[in-house]
Length: 350
Ligand SMILES: NC(=O)c1ccc[n+]([C@@H]2O[C@H](COP(=O)([O-])OP(=O)(O)OC[C@H]3O[C@@H](n4cnc5c(N)ncnc54)[C@H](O)[C@@H]3O)[C@@H](O)[C@H]2O)c1
Image (cartoon, rainbow, N blue to C red; front, side, top):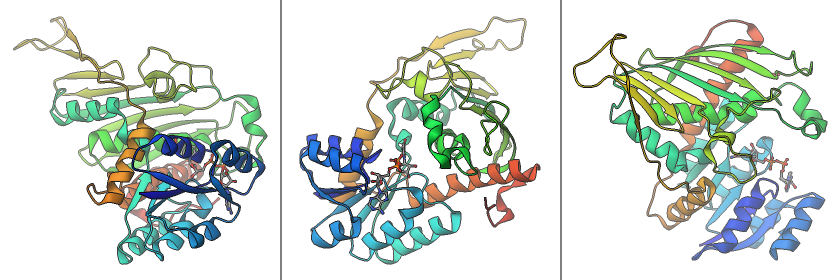
């Protein structure tokens, strides 16, 4: 299979992994800044400033699009017109309507579209989904999710990160919300989110408290902040990315009619046999977790299988749109300071 990577910041991980994979040729990479040029030299791969020229001048089976979000739709359409299958990074697009247009266009052109919610390829996430699907805690009643850490100060030197749309909700929260949708299989029907900027005082949220209501009636508490020193976040607790320090802590808790499950420790608390109620001791069990695979590598391996026609995209364009819809509803809720139903329609701007 012959592929190209468009964008070489986050895309650099894909490009370097692609070079190590059997049955895959990384034909070229694109990027229009100095870092991209340096990285393509280091990788020893043909570099293009103009990603459209790259597509026009090479025979490709698939393309990995890690360009800024505003270019996702344009790049997917350009590939679809030429019958090239796409892995497009999350969020699928800047706006829900664009995402929907990408889905229909790829269907019309019979091109496969995989959206880069790579945590769905995590072995720990898959194990969590299996346990919840098997009903290990009974019917799901509630969830508590936390994503709290402190980003370094230079991160906020980029202007877009201190203005509307550049906050942690869309950049980081989208991962937790997609995880939630994936492991529970539930749709989110309404959200209420309060955003605050009390830590840095920028024109964008630095912390969010949200309550989400799912299609089975389960409710979810979600707290997110990128300005508080804390060990509780997916990044710090799952040990999937060597870039982050590891803390042996939990970031998600699932509460059901039969028991409660913490993630990623997989500590399960239930009552034994016929016992039930607070006068009985809870029984604590642990599940040995599977091998911790790099989800980016697993995602890339899946994409090759999609290109070969032996697998269908695990994260479809429709799934990418549904996750984006929840995030847009949360953003709308914190701007308009009210509960938002997911079926209300048009998205908030700014
Ligand atoms: N799945 C994840 O965990 C994850 C993590 C980081 C980023 N992302 C996603 O990846 C995408 C890229 O994010 P990033 O942080 O790498 O962005 P970035 O802005 O740091 O880098 C963008 C890259 O695209 C190139 N580029 C920009 N405009 C171009 C153009 N017109 N022609 C050719 N090249 C162009 C730049 O040279 C650069 O290499 C975003 O959609 C982001 O949400 C996903």
